[in-house]
Amino acid sequence: MLLVELFDNLNEKQIWGRKGKTLVRKYRCVGGKRHGRIVSKPQQCFAAPDVKAKMRMRITRKKLGQRMMRKAKRTKRTNPASRALRTLNR
Image (cartoon, rainbow, N blue to C red; front, top):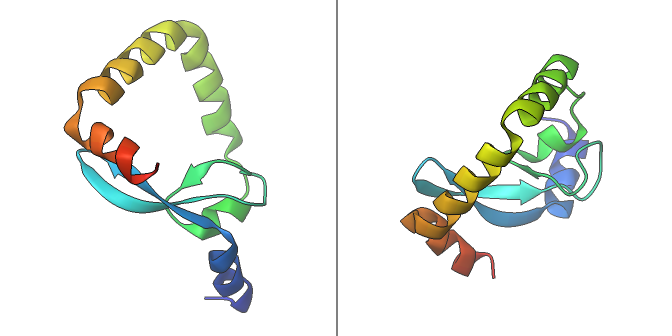
């Protein structure tokens, strides 16, 4: 581990996130290319973007955007882990 990574860990804000049905600690990026995004490790905030995955997600969003949004809304409303997550991050 680099010394920079130790100090970056202090800057990133710790929050709770879902991994399946369990709640785990995650980080909100304060800087880097993923500014404002939620990641599982602080080192990911400064990682190089995966262009292939980015393009694949754009295509998927165009095809299934509305369906993905409806499913996510239902999950956040009904899944017990998502409901607990809302109160933990408040």
